[in-house]
Length: 216
Picture 1 (cartoon, rainbow, N blue to C red):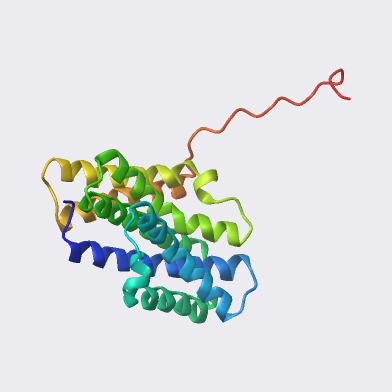
Picture 2: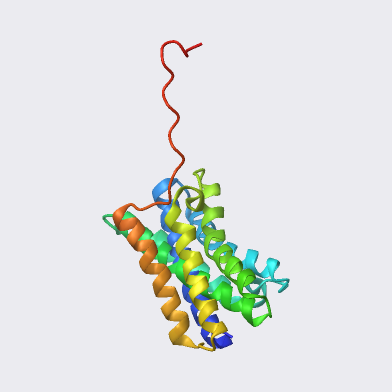
């Protein structure tokens, strides 16, 4: 087991809050929405990955609908972003940091829940990654842009790294808060390094421009 249920719940709620802020700030930056739209987008960002996780794990109903704290934390994060987001001089930095925090925490908690329910290491890593990128993917689709997981090589990769670190540590008998936080920090650092230095996985080579004889 990667960590106790209390530790996983705490990390899950922190990740929920971070993603709610991220989703709402993204809405403020990219779209013109009223308070209902901003808070809703924040909640979808925060709760989407966890809901997908619980459906995949057949842990139904999803935790979102069983524990009122998820809804309250997500709504609070969205509301804070709505009222305070416009006062931030530059939104790119806070958005990227909050996104990396949510990505890291959800990767670890998603993998941890899968392990707790008896899933194998490979399946647990995949579930952790899906938990991490699911809410952000839904967010990006709703605001009409290519999801980050499909356009940034250092988005899904850090999530996979964090989930793998947590699962591997659990396989060797290391669990608890230190391991979970350490795995989350690994994911966060890799993601932020990608943002800072504009690192990506390889893209396909660009098609050559057609020559004069190739046109038409």
